[in-house]
Amino acid sequence: MSLIVGLTGGIGSGKTTVAGFFAELGAAIVDTDAIAHELTSARGAAMPAIAAAFGGAVLRQDGSLDRALMRRLCFSDPAKRKSLESILHPMIRGESAARCRRADHAPYVLLVVPLLIESGAYREHVARILLVDCDEARQIERVMARSGLSEKEARDIMATQASRAERLAAADDVLSNSGAPGELQRDILALHRRYLELARRGDASGRA
Ligand code: ATP
Image (cartoon, rainbow, N blue to C red; front, top):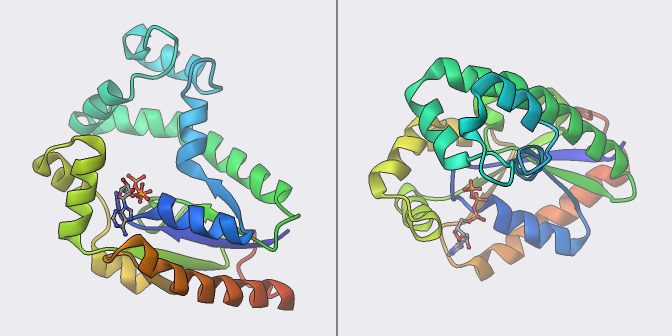
């Protein structure tokens, strides 16, 4: 099993951008959000259970999950959110563990878990936590520009997530992404070398 580093950060902080740079350096990426999308795509493995629990109204015409509708339903009804999570989370955990095991060709794995600090579910499977840190004003700007959410919607989502201070307290390594993407690269290269060294030493602490 390769060294597994958990990559986390708030909405729009830059996790996907950072993971892309690490992938170019040779890290394997296992992205729990991407797995969630696959599970809820047309003919995704979670769709029969979701349709049974929520009815056909949450499906789009092609059979995939209507994510915007589901987000609204879950925001206003915690029981619905729990029900969705009880279907999806075990499937995401199982699939991400399988992908981490299959990634042993790579020197180490970055396991991208947006709510790693909030849920705690993945902590025992990762050797370290790498945080993509971004100041809140930029986070809101990027979320609004990318997804067309209003400032209030972006803030509402952020209010459900850990605070910046809580994330910083839980992280072993921090990448600051408040500047331009190019500024990240030197810090990413330094961390990549560090993870290669940890992997080479076979530092077993916290491996899945
Ligand atoms: P989410 O939590 O919503 O999945 P994320 O943490 O994966 O988001 P990204 O998708 O990497 O974040 O970045 C969010 C948006 O901000 C994207 O449109 C991305 O291109 C942009 N972005 C990321 N980093 C920077 C940066 N340093 N400067 C400017 N824009 C950036």
